[in-house]
Length: 109
Image: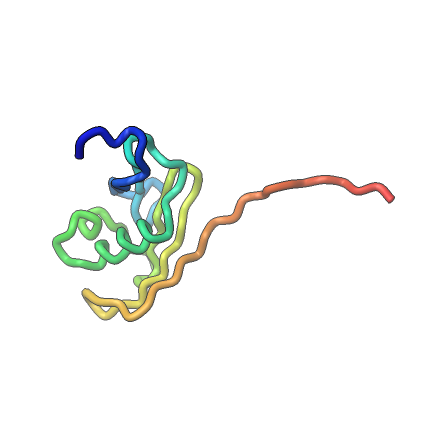
């Protein structure tokens, strides 16, 4: 890859068994530091790979009660990917992001 220290690509995601029960644990590197979350495109790619028999993500995936929902854990939370599929292909995908509080305050009139 050469010297990528000043670049934002390539983005590499590692997967492992989940720590929270179901789904996959992920760590995304952009390009040499671990990102605090996972991007939407990366999440869709990992979830799609997880439904392909024989792939690394499929071998680490712990299925939950909903076979179409794949929870991807990352350092600051998780991202749920809904991937309705009939075996090895999907017609659509949706992503549900975790929310975080941005501000809390009190207003006096």
